[in-house]
Amino acid sequence: MGSKNRNLGDITVNSISIHPGKNGGGYIKTYNDKGKQTSYLGTGENGVGLIGVHNAEGAKVTYIGAGDFGSGFLKTYNQFGIRTSYLGSGGQGGGILQTYNSDGKQTAYVGTAEHGVGVIGVHNANGKQITYMGTGQQGGGFFRTNSRSGIMTSYLGEGKDSRGGHMQTFNMNGEMTTYLGTSVHKAGTLEINNEYGLKVGSLGASFDREVYRGDGVITLYDNTGAFGWMRDGKTSDNLDD
Image (cartoon, one colour):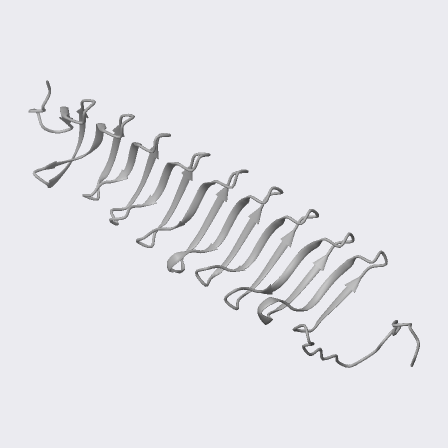
């Protein structure tokens, strides 16, 4: 009974129950032959369960547990202790996967966004989101690209007013430069803007006092957006200057 040897040797049991001690919940820690911690199984902060795995040097590389709202998650770290990925439940209650580079900057997001829709986001080395693919407000898909500073440079997808698919491009000042897709009249259209976002040319289907005729029409405008010239593919009384 008075022996100072605390090594119990090999033990074979059917089960082990660990109850909270005076400092909180119970836990099990394991160590390698260098005295470095290799794992942790037990209770964490706020009474949640968790599992931690460490490398041979004692650095935490994997963490499995329960989050702030009672949902599960898995985190991984590199050998320097910097988080490299997260798999679990996000703030919207759905599942997400996030990845990070060696500087701790987020590089990708795959998962559930607001209103329960799926999204994919890709980030550059500085953590700025440069590509985004997901579900729009009307339930259709879209694809968006941004510049390295986070300014949107292009959009491909369904419009907010359910007119149909379209593609938009933007300059580095955030001004729209082109629109190719479906018009508000559900016909095809191409619009070209100047550097200030003012429309200077369009190609589409003609309308006569909002009555669809279906003939092709080309329209040009000056640098202030004022009408300048038009020609369609059917009538002989085209307008010009």
